[in-house]
Picture 1 (cartoon, helix red, strand yellow):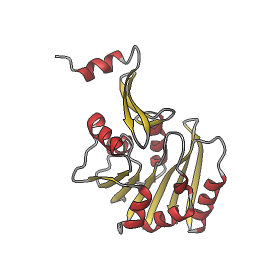
Picture 2 (cartoon, one colour):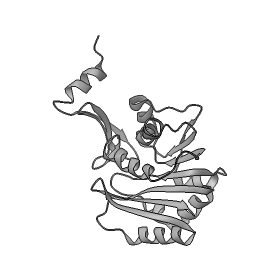
Picture 3 (cartoon, rainbow, N blue to C red):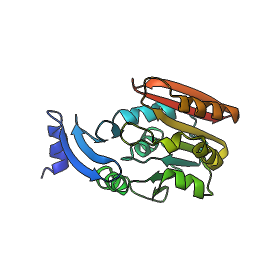
Length: 220
């Protein structure tokens, strides 16, 4: 018997098949089969398993994951970064993923089979509150915090980044999916300067996948 998912995947090579889900935080979310692959999108942006997955993969390629025992993901989305870490980089150590939107977490679980396990802890919480309150440290912190096309203002404030650095291990790294803007914003320039001032090697990759700015910070 052909399942609905199989039928949707096959038909998606002819035309996209979309299911819409309402979220109080992210507005209308779209789960779309396109060219045989399922994507999660907001009204104007890809949230998971499309261009976003390629963007974060480029950032991860700039890092050495072999000696990283723990990763914090701020902004789970549909969980494509989890898939990338496990499938493309064979990462098997601990991942903690935080997302404020329970609807997003439910979609990651039901549509993309991203569920908590022995080495994956999924937490529904505000990213700012999480980094303020946790006492854990992580070898890599991935920051991918968007509402549609925009990074919420609180995540561009240096007060947030002060907490991020406290949550990073001594030799750890940071991967920041920073902006969809054509030009680096003034606030992003301040964040880059702040990281540089704390003895980091900071690399900025602009127009990744012809869209995003990605910032990679490594301890020296």
